[in-house]
Image (cartoon, rainbow, N blue to C red; front, top):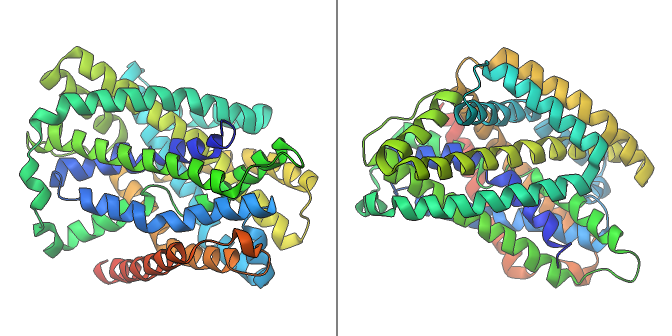
Length: 408
């Protein structure tokens, strides 16, 4: 179980980042607790598609893209067209937020782009020389700091929360609010393509356990569910933090990463004192470092696995070679986007999260077909209620994607 929890914690480390620190905090700051139900509903609806990655990786010891490939090369190409072009945009948004938090916490007087580039280069080096094992260990340490500091900060904020905003539904009639909800849902708790890396992380653990020593699929599912539940709880905590510190004081969130991070930490300092500000700073920095680290690994694994299954070169040696090529290429592309598109942090963030959400129905459908198809052992296929929940999620995500284009 200690090994199985690794992929679940990597999921949490990646998830508890942009969607939480930035989008959930903004949700609390602007709408109080009105969007808490939406946050929980999005987490529930997207759960099956993510867990399908665990199911497929455990049962087959392969990427869920292998299930796509059985449908035909077109399915893998469709996935690649939906995801790979927006990956550097997503990474640039995550890196900008991470750099902003780092500047706000440390007081370093450097541009966001410079700090972001240094972070990306450091992450690339860690992944190339340390691989999955280093990623897992670093993530566990950072996540421990994150959970403790976030829970402690949330408790301090509770007395300042306007609990009546839970029943506020006036946002439903506001097109701007609907667009924000779509952007919030795009990264909440993660972009849906993370299900592919989830299958790869799970397959990696099973191979490391060795033939005859593998885990039960029920244990793999429990491990993932525990990490997923932690992710949802943290999302609510950040929304409460935004509601208690910013909404109650009618403070509008800043539109760029350093200013937003400094604003949140400064508000904790002025309202709750230096110790609360320190806890908020630790939580903010931990949350973004884990996300940036996992995001580059996810993007590289997805790119490597996609090339594998398009070219039908699916042995481990080919994957490792493609991965080691993908990491530096992706880091360079991320840096280029960071230096060219970071004129308005909020606009970049909403663009990245909205694009991720628009691509989500496509991935949810492909994942569903993969785990119920002939490449998946019958005894490992998901339960009927989970399948039905995923179908409901596909309908909801498709409707919201249409709404996104209509409102735009």
